[in-house]
Length: 294
Image (cartoon, rainbow, N blue to C red; front, top):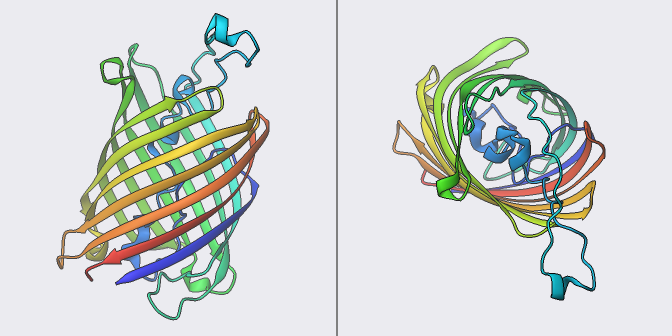
């Protein structure tokens, strides 16, 4: 089975960027719920000195560069902010709202999210993390697809200088999905991942990550599965506050019942504008297709 899906996102306001990701859509087929990870591992980290937008450590280009070599600007490192709060709202259009392999239907939907996260620094290389977020999804025509998602996480991030400053993640995640307050299902999982940010120059950066997510308890058999994903994203800073992004993510979904395996591919590009450090406007397009033996 091959499933295709396109998604266009036009936001109102946004406090964090997601490259190569597709928001959750249909709970009519609950097995599709996590094909739509809303953030990359790197964005979850929120370590300001490791983030993709920290690309301006290089001096501006000049005619004397050939003689002097590449120059770095020495500047004070901003103090790590342990607490973060996000409030997001976005309008999406999709050409396959129900993830159907035939007779795909178009629709638009709203997504609102509030999120709070605390990341205390435990040692020089180790960070803790506790997070709580709530999402609301409301469709224009297909109101039966409306749902809410509550997510709670707790874990650790570890910076590894011996592995080219890669960052390891170990995290517990609880998710509760509801439809107009009525419970759809609950899920408990353990996540492990590794991320590497490569700063190519003052304008270009790459983000590489691997992530595994194992369900340890799910009260709906159709969604009991393990996920393994790899993604790469490239960001180009057009101006200090205007960034172009291009990303690809591959996810293998290994279901624990029925012998089902899905291979999900997602391609995305985006443009984000940050007139203020705390305010971001974002627009993007994502194309996904899924190959399944089911």
